[in-house]
Length: 194
Image 1 (cartoon, rainbow, N blue to C red):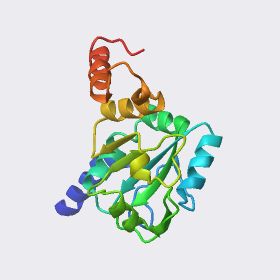
Image 2 (tube, helix red, strand yellow):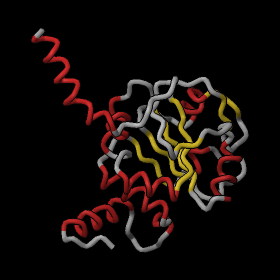
Image 3 (cartoon, rainbow, N blue to C red):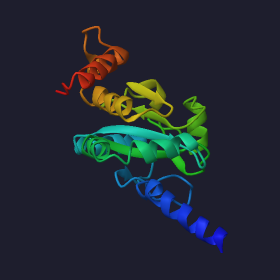
């Protein structure tokens, strides 16, 4: 009886921790409400993103990824992060080991796992940010304006999404992402956020 009560108490305590994590799909990947279910033709996805005034971004994830779980639990579950992504980005999820067909910008069709290998994605999560226009014959990874490899905290993640959305990578002001992020950290520490 004590073991049963202890197990029930442990489950009740753990429940709030898991309550904000997105539901998991049949493929073992978390499904955020702002992720798009597309035919995974990146040329069509880019056109649709542009039509909506959003930026195309690819989330490469895998089943059982503890770092993906961390991002969904601690970062993407935050209302301000989720709202910013939903408002500004067209998110297509790619399964690192998936068999679903995906068509790269260069027209090559392959499985998700073949695309991930082609793009040299070795671990997850890996977030690939695309420009509004991709040169003919270029691949997703060749065209990327930024790649966020790995799990990061809320501040770094939001700064990266903001840096891409504001096209700061195209500015000729000497402020690359690391300098931008350092400045944003300092501004948050000072209470200045705009």
